[in-house]
Image 1 (cartoon, rainbow, N blue to C red):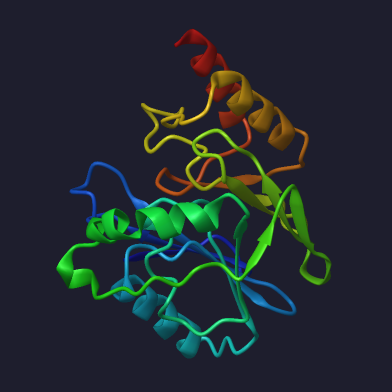
Image 2: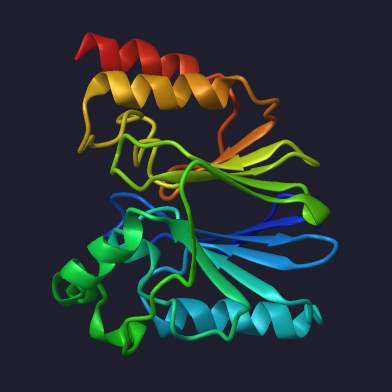
Length: 220
C-alpha cells in the first residue's frame, strides 16, 4: 500500500490494486492528541496488518477508535482485527451489516485474509463529537442511509467515505437515496471550513469538489 502522510495528524493508506486498478481504496488514520481514529477498515486482515505495523513503528499507543463511514463491505471487513475502544457508526449501519455480511464478506479476495463479523458498539443518530480531539462525526445520507463524514476541526480535514465518487471522471457516487437528500447532505458539509477532502476511493481533493458534485448531480 502507498502511505500518504498528509500531515503528522492525517495518514492515508492507499491500496491501488484491489479493484484491478479501476479506483483506489483508502484507509485513513487520524493521530489526535488523546486518541487515534481509524476511518474504515478495508476488506480484511491484510489491510489491518499494515495499519498495525505503522502504528507499532510510530509508537502509537493511544486508545484506538474505529469509525465505519457506512455499511458497504470494503469499509468494515477488517473491523475484527485490531483491538479498539469503540467501533463507531450511524445507527442505520448495524442492521445492514448483519443482514449483508455473507455477501459483503465475498468482497475480500482470499489473499486479504479471513474476516469475522464485528459490529459497531457505539452508534449515533445526527452527530457525535469527540471534543477533546476536535473530531466530529456527522450524518450525511445519500450514497446510503447510514453515511457519515468525519471532520477534523483542528486541521480542517474531512473524510467523506463514499459520498464522493470513485474517480475524477465519476465525481458523484452511486446514490441509494434521492438526489434531494444527497444535495442536502453536501450543502451541510459545505458550511464547514475545509482544506482537504479524503474519500473512500478517490484522490485527496479540495473543498471546491462539492460545487462540482452539485452541478453534476443536477445534470443527471
